[in-house]
Structures are given as structure tokens and as C-alpha cells.
Length: 458
Length: 69
Image (tube, rainbow over all chains, first blue to last red; front, top):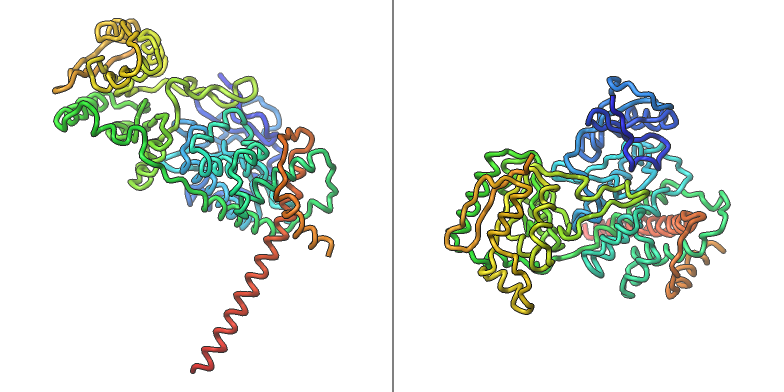
């Protein structure tokens, strides 16, 4: 019997996650019994699951464990890929924030309240954000203010305000601040004009000041008292604050990419057909489309896979991709803001709370289309390094080789010395053959490019 | 009365203040709780005033409607 506690599940004494024979379970401890029973039998669980807001679970007695203090073992519905808020676009984080507040409102109607406001409690599942932490609900004490208020502001409001007012990539600050962006840091980074917006002035600027002012003071119980009406007013105000934050992506760095590449419409159609036939042949469960731009090829892959990660380092491309998926009700594409040359690291305590991108792989199949020249030339990566990286990332690889004669490569070389003597198709094939079997190789008509389908060596 | 004065003056006092970088390692939630209690009061008052105002508006519009009939 192989039981392993999840390394990220240690903060809350009410329970923890563990895996057993590859399946994820959650132990509910006795101290959470009253809250859990209220959640399940008070109608809140059914309401949230019915509305697809909370990840469903089932109770199980099949797992015999010797962890102490167990009240129940539950098996949550499986999520195909765990992503983190520093990998989301503006609208993904905004939707996650709105979901958290919506759940808090509903929970209050059922006499419960969220005891934390962590962005890590949200995952994207079947195309929508969903709340995953069953232990986050506690019976509402009407005299207490909302205990998750500070965390909500740090995990959601601060990064959203920074993304909206300063730069859409600033949620990457969450990599360095696992418990949300410190409000005093957010206060310094936001433009002065945000002080004239009531919600940002209060929840960010004044909040930062209050945190500093009272950090070492003991608070009398009388001063902690609040009312349910006040809590509702705060949640209402936070909802309005989040709703008003916007970001309109301007044209992306690659938004006109497809019209400016070396493809005629015929060759582009041929490229699509070849790629679709390979994906269809292998029916992969998980596909990683690396350098996905706005997800054109992710959409092709999505017809034949359970889940496609649409990865790019252009925040506007990821934002547009997510908006398109929402508008088209696509449920199996997850756009993620990740730089392939500097993928998400493992973070948190002992570097084991949030996993690196590599630890969340490998993919069944990866697409690396029009990417190799950016890795090898823009980032000076030797082809041997690129081949080794992909061998760790995926079982099968569909990769496009773009030679030096291609206008896109010429563009990358136009203002720099060509030091890339090893960047040619022969060496590309040699280096990738060290890690992969080349199954198929098809030149794309009317271009100098070649598509390869490869399988990792056993 | 003192509370009302506090509610009105605190935001003004803090408006132009700059918070220094703080690592709230002792009780990071204290300031958040105090702010939330105060904010809850202010927003509660706003909510009540809004409700009164809507009632007055409703009353006035009903009176004028009756007159026009």
C-alpha cells in the first residue's frame, strides 16, 4: 500500500490531502466534523455542486489508513492539471476572484463562511474556475468579521489591480509571495490616481496603512465585533471592486503572426491537416501546446484530446485565448501564461508547496510549432539542450523545424551576429535522435519548414 | 460621536500617508480586522442611507403620480 501526503497540504489542521495508488483523497479530521456535517447536510454542498461552483467529492471507506484523527475520507473529482494564479491571465484571475466572492455570499445564506480566501483554492476544471477546498467552510459566527478578508485582498484584489493599472504580467509577483502580494508593496506600485477610487483606496491603500499601524498591537475583543450586515456590505463592495477592474489587451506581439509568416493559405492548410492527422492517430489524453499564441493549433488538438494546455509567454495572447474559449464554450483548453525558457519553478516551503511545470508533466503529446528558432536563436539554446528538455516534457512530440533561410529566422538575425553555426536541419535531427525516434518527417509545401512527429526513446 | 468622527477622519488622515514595507509577522490580521470593522460600519451607513433615499424617492414619485391622476 502506497500512501503519500501531499506536500502542499499542511497548513490547515482540519484535514489534508494524500494519494493512494495514484488517486487523490482528502482526510477530514475530527475537529472539522461539525463544519463538514453542516456543509453536507445543511444544503450548501448540494447548492454549490449543482451550480458547478464547488468540486464534487464522494465519501469512501475503501481506503484503510492509519493517519490519526480521521473523521471521513473523501475522494474529490479528478482535475486533469493543477495550475497556479501566477500562470493565469487577467480574466482567469478575475473569474477566480468573482467565484470566491459568489461562494462566500451563498455560504452566508446557508449559515457558513469561507475561512480562507486563497487563490490556490481555485482550479480550472472543464473550462471554468471551480472551488476545490472542501475544508474552507466554517459555521458562520455573525459577530465576527470575515476572517478571509486580508487573504482575499492579497491573493486577488492586489494582483488584479496591478494587472489592470500597471502591467498584465504582474501576477507573476505571486511566485515570490506565496500568500499573496503584500498590500504595502501593492500600495507602492499602484499609480497615485487609484487613491481616488473608493474600493482601491480602502481595500489596498488604507488596508496597507492599517496593517502597518496595527501590526504589533493587541486587539480587544470588543473591537473585533462586526455584524452579518457589515460582512455582506464588505463582500458586496469587494464584488463591485473586482467587477470594475478591467484590462483590454492591445494587439499581441504575434497577433498578426499567421498573416506575416511564410505560409500561403494552401501550405497553412496542409500544416493543419498533417498536425491533426498525427494527433488523431495517437489520441493523447493531455497535450501541451508550447508557444501556442492565441491557440489556433490548441483548438485542433482539443478535438482529439481530453485536455490541451495552451502555453505562451504573451499575456495578451493568453487573455484572448481564454476569452475565445469562454465565448465558444470550449471546456478542454486551458490557456496558461508560462515562458517556456523560464517555466514556473517549484515554490513554497522546502520548494514543495507548488510544483514546477516539469513536475506536473510529462504530457502525452507536445506541440512545438514555430518555436524552435525562438529557443535556439532568441535564447541561444543549443539544440542538444532543447532536445533533452522536450524528452523530459513529453512522450510524443510534434515539432516544426524552421531553417535559417526562413524570413522569421532572418528577422531574428537581422541585428545580431550569426553565431549559430550548429543551427541546421542535420544537427537538429542528430540531437533529437539522441532522445526520440523520428516517426515521420513532412516538408511543408511552398515553405522551407519541416514537420516532425517523434516518440521518446524507451 | 467619537466613532463617527473617527470614521470620517481616518480615511482623510491616511489618504496621503505612505505605508512602509511591513512584514506583519506578529499579527498580520489585526489591521485588516480593524479596517474591516470600520469599513463595515461605513458601508452599512451608506447602505442604510441608500435605502432611505430610495424610500423617499419612491414616496415622492407615488405622491406625484396620485396628483397627476
